[in-house]
Image (cartoon, rainbow, N blue to C red; front, top):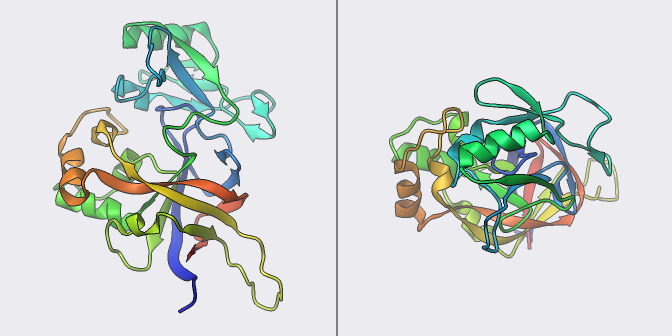
Length: 259
């Protein structure tokens, strides 16, 4: 066996235009140097926070998960060709412009202290711009925690790339650290030259926090999910990576593990 092994295929792609708000399921995504285009380009900053991590996240305000960013105007908020959200639908169905004072005030009031919207073109990430998880890991956590397996379970983990691996082993991702995931067909049939493939270097295991406990549709907390991750794999589920080669990602695309 060479240094490359076919792992499986991309099962789902997500981006999260506003940190900790609802994500978008994508069929195709552009992988740029700062992760998936349009991913976590906005975040609310807690004005009173003096720590090194001032962002308001769902671990501080679970209802943030129920806010859904969307776009109405095709020209607005387009930076470097990235399509960014223009509006947000609140949990009770109201729609505000993303940059509006009304939205800022509502979130400040729910959080109990002032926040402001920040836009960082390189994205606002906890560890690395790309998070990857396998269906085997998600299904294992769902099964072992006594919860059903559905899309909701996937969304709890807030991944960018979900891979259906050829072997359904849970936590297989831990073995990818220090190696490269390549996305695409590579040598396509008669073409003598390999097509350059998007590639992500896996840098570290993803240590989970209470966010996995929150239901993405209700924000209700179920601490059994995190307890299960801790019990099964010492609080790690999935991996983080950095972009080694930009390109296109597609659901169904072949994923290869390189050196």
